[in-house]
Image (tube, helix red, strand yellow):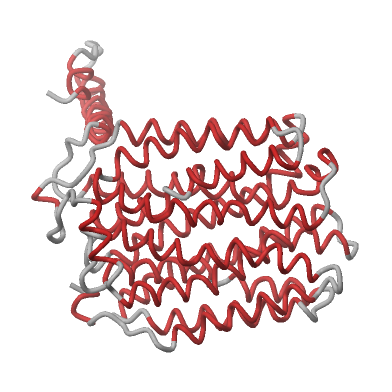
Amino acid sequence: MPFGFMFCAGASQPANMKQDNRRWKNYNRTVCRRISIITDVMNGQTGGSNYRWYVLALSSLTFTFGFAIPTMSMPVLFKEISEDLGLDLVQIGWLWGVVPLAGFFIFLIGGLLSDRFGTKLVLGLACILAGFAGAMRGLSDGFFMLVITMFLFGLLISVIPPTVHKANGVWFLGRSLGLANGIVSMAMGLGFTAGAMLSATVLSPMLGGWRNVMFLYGALSASIGILWLLTRGQPRRSELLGSYDAQVPLLQALSRVVRIKRVWLLGFILLGHAGSVQATLGYLPLYLREIGWPAASADGALASFHWASMMATIPIALLSDKLGSRKPFLLIATMLTAIGIGLLSVADGAMVWVAIVIAGVARDGFMAVLFTMVAETEGVKATYAGTATGLVFTVSRVGSFMAPPIGNHLARTGLRLPFVLWASMAAMAFIGSLFIKDAGRAEIIQ
């Protein structure tokens, strides 16, 4: 018997009036039903497809608190960190690039592990260990120590994205996959917004400095990991929306995925897009402060990028599901990113805000659509979704690692020059999107 009903069975009832007694019984039944639903969800005892929404909610929390907030807190805290540790602009560029560098070594491994051992175990351990590594950033006493802790943090959080998208591929295979990826991408955008808005101007003064902010975010990530370890690992047969192999050998998954050209092309597209965005986000708060913007306004500009992205994510994902076509959204997103970042190289005053919104409005929607295309690729599907997503992320990390330090080095010549480089990378992603082919409409809307 579920725990909720056992709890409610012993509830006392008033014995005064019959009307009060009936009201109490109705109230008691309602409470029992709600408690039973909660306890059944936590224990994976729900029928039908209800449990997948709990998994989606937990995936969203993972992207918000386990990945996005602890990552995007760094750009707005770089000013405080650089003053505390005596860092220059190029060193900050290397620090911001070392996280995607770590991802280059681990994204594919994380995807392979999720295909081999399932999402529950991999996400649980990754969030807990990433929480500890993220907290260790607060113990750094110089540039090299911070590089080491940032690299370790980058290794562990890089396991999270391919595994979350693998979970969506398993629980939402078919028509609603785009929506599911849109929801977790919006959750990531929410985390990016919160990290940019709260870390430097609210939490750092409240908690006594940037180090304690790192400790707080580490604890939140570890808590999410514990929830994953308590979660059911895979759908029951009645809940499956499509067929897949729950566990596949590592070498089989790798040899299968590396031969698929579409996966490599999607990785190339993400290389240009993610590299341009990653570098811009790390540089933007410092750039705005350098040209005289107040700290709160500089952080707010960064947050507006994520806010615009977050608001557009679900409409983009829903439209791609409804239309049965993903490619047009890749083209629009990469074009807007290139235009927005390019405008930052010439914009002043209010136009800076316009450029930021244009650059950011389709970012998370782009990610949702791109990784849905990965899972829909012929020969990938849910079985190899973790490995394929990991390979796409691995290819993209080359751009995300190199773009920040190279762009920040150009800033020594002119503060606006980095945006020219990064806009060119986004344009490269647009060109790559011209060559991608959609999956069949029947496969998208099945």
